[in-house]
Structures are given as C-alpha cells and as structure tokens.
Length: 108
Image (cartoon, rainbow, N blue to C red; front, side):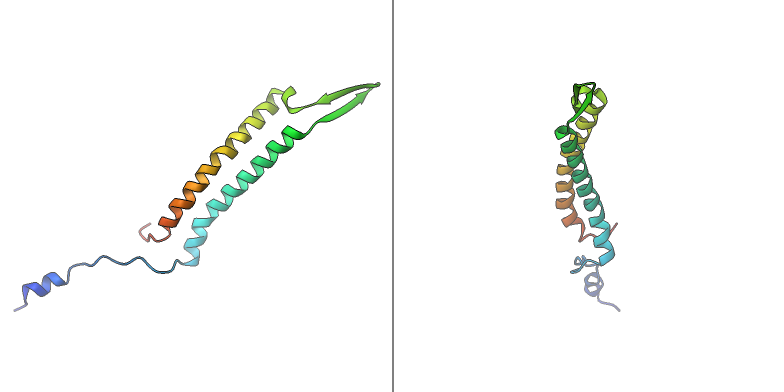
C-alpha cells in the first residue's frame, strides 16, 4: 500500500519563471513602445514646425504675415498634437515599467 506522505509530496510545485525571454515575445512587447516613441517624435516635430513657422506674402507692395494662431483650425491642430505628445510620455514610461514585469509572465 502506498505511503500517504509520498502522495502529498507529489503536490504541484510552483514553476520558476523562465530565465530567458524568446525573441518573438520580446518583439511583441517592444513594438508598442516603438510606435509610442514615433508618435511622441512626430507630434513634437509638428508642434514645433507649426509654432515657429511664419510666412510673408507680398501683394502689390503690401506685405502680409501668416501665423498658426490666425486660424482656429491650426490652433486646434497645435493643441491636439501637444496633448498627444504630453500624454504619450507617461504612457510610454508606465508601459516600459510594467513591461519589465510582464516579460517574465507566460500565462497570456
């Protein structure tokens, strides 16, 4: 007859997390971060270009200047891109910090 203590020693042991992460899993975790970096970069560049650009047009010896704040559509464009840029930075940092913990998980 089997020893009851040996039956309990066969209980499920917690598994250790894998020591290495596969390449496919790492790519899946870094692709959103790369896209977030691109959105931060492109939003910041578009805001900088819109804010610093000015244009002068001469019509019949009358010079007219054009700025982004003359048009409400351009104002909203600059404001929207600024919000996107500013809100994506903490999202990227949070995703990076949580991503380090999630790299070791295998129950997805």
